[in-house]
Image 1 (cartoon, protein in one colour):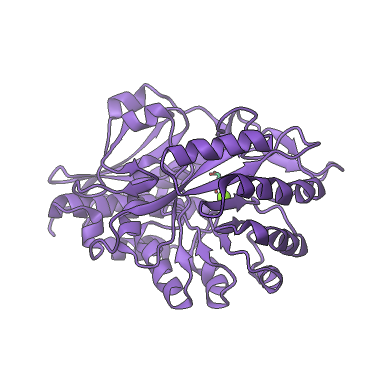
Image 2: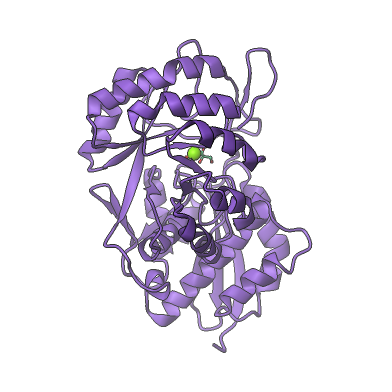
Length: 404
Ligand code: KDG
Ligand code: MG
């Protein structure tokens, strides 16, 4: 391909929540879009792109996708980390988008074509009280979902991350200083297994139920929770321990057969290596953008396949419709894909990011438009300016900080 990248620009917009989007334009006028959103750290990725990567992209051959990935990752002295990898992920998505548009093919066809007809998705149900949670699960089932993540309030706490007092929730709160919440693991462990057992009794055996512990537990607490939840027959228990020390999962695994999912905060294949090769997890949760793009998510899937670990990417509202498209192209073309998280996006985000992907009966499909299949309405995006927003922090009852 003799075409060159002639412009690399970064867009910030907040159609209901903040999104960072990379726009690459070729000399032939082909535009590629990449998601660069890192929840609560949007400006850091925007600056990394604007100041460091965009100048290096202008003049490059957009068809050299793998070489560009290697140049930005392997070539850099300071590498890894969520900011760097999200920026690289955005570039990778935009290049695959350009390749697809140039070839006139959806990206999944470039990845070898569909290995399934549609992608199973799970959505979120939250309820402070268990009755409310059961209603939320019923609403998800009525929309056609066959898999639902269930998060419950905890008696004695005022707030629980990811559980609204009303319907739904948004992870990030507006402002430049994070909200502070109080967390009590003992209260959570006393309540969650019983609440989830009630949900299972309500749904019957067939619905896949998932639960997210948001990295808050010690290994033995995680083991206890996994064991206590065995009668609930979860599809998975997610993020039981903090992300830094993978070896602690050996203890969890030794005590429970509840399937484990981990990795939405991981940025590289190397962070997954031990978890996969020791079979300490069942699902690798890397988000397509946060872990370096389509190219590296496919490498992760290849590493995971012989160990019978599946990739089941992160998909909350902060994974933009552009990244959702990319995740779906990978999902459709990757044999060891498990399930795609689909929290949904705020209404105006669907107008700003007009997408070919669809969600029907609890299943997603990337559509057959060339490239990723997302067009960004830049004029509309400009009408939703960026507003600072942050994820909360949490302290234990004694005032000390607790883990994510
Ligand atoms: O940005 C962080 C949120 O997207 C995250 O907390 C949501 O845990 C989450 C999930 O599984 O979607
Ligand atoms: Mg999670």
